[in-house]
Length: 276
Ligand SMILES: [Zn+2]
Image (cartoon, rainbow, N blue to C red):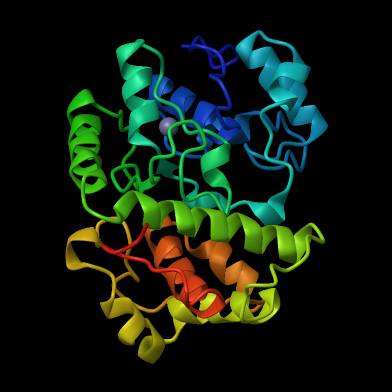
């Protein structure tokens, strides 16, 4: 079969280009990365699926039979604000259920790739880490897997304090990002400055003693599918604490680190079962 045309459904709403390329790899049953490299057509750098060069945008549009501007709209241009490329696999089970019900391709949205995104902007549901995709060639998402995730989520959202805590963490993440990078003023109610908080948040992921400290034992056991510090400490990123956060690709781990940060910034905000 020729790979000069990719006869797959076009880009979904807010779908990332990496998601589209993965769908095409699945269609052609080829190994991850192979299809993207064919866009080189003998030339050098074509960027990455989420950040393609202008030439790659044109070639990709040709494969899909759509306009380059349509492809260009789906790029993830702010590298600093998004997770490392290999780990953009957070998803909203409610969005995926809607995809499956509407018989659309199940797609990763660009919004879910942002470092500060811990909730789906459409449903306000906590994003979940898609483990199945790791290393699984051409793996498709099934209704059964999405149903299990939706059920797990539904049982959590009835837990006292769960939804309120998730919203506090998401709001804190956005506010912290705005203070660090958009020249927003630090809230007067914060006990620490944003740069210090960022270092604290990264340390909650990398420092073994801190990871297992009192604050993390405050996370209810039953919640730990959604908020957890991971099995082992992450390595410290050489480019600073923000890069550590970019490498925390599991939204559950970012939520745990934000929990620690928020408890330092706003000790008056109650997190956990008593949250309101
Ligand atoms: Zn959603």
